[in-house]
Image (cartoon, rainbow, N blue to C red):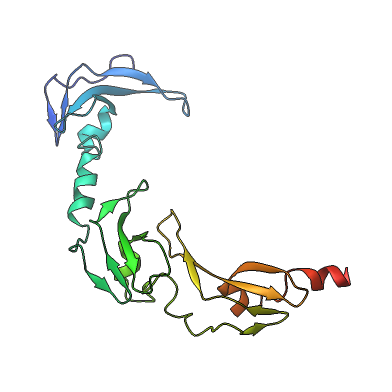
Amino acid sequence: MSNPKQIPVGTRFGRLTTIGEVYLKADASRPWSYGAVMCQCDCGAEPIEVKASSLRSGNTKSCGCQRKDANARGTKTFPVGTQFWCLVTIGEVHMNIDGKPCVLVRCDCGRSEPFLIRTSALLRTTRPTRSCGCAHLSDVPIGTRFGHQVTISLLRSESRDDGKPNEVLVDVRCDCGSDRPVLVKNLLNGDSTSCGCVKDHFA
């Protein structure tokens, strides 16, 4: 392929306009070259290199902005102050670094700092997130025993930066006398029954 099939400069393909002639570019994964051309997108982004075949087939129509715009139009939004069970939104819906719609919320329990959560976790019909983690764990009173440990505080939540529900912790006192914070889920599922002293005793 010594002379690639040309596309006239100024030809439009969706949001892209060719701004140069088609040239050959080596393909590192194959023993042949392909035709490429520089294009300018209507959104004003920097010119991009596109395979000529992708333009002709219609597979490439923008620099990527068209898909982003479509995702933004499909993003569910709701006003600040919208209540989702124990959670209330205190910010606008926006995209996180992964391109997922998130929103800042506060839990009615007052035990946790406001945290970021994906809107899909609030809107899903199967097991939606309804609180900072306190709602389904609020029935663990001080003095509850889990193996060799006894709870000595109320539950509290720690914020996470990944948009997932907060981790719920509680302070416990082991029969050996040591105090430490423990994830409540580890107490409930039996993964934490002591501070480690029982295992050390039998080691």
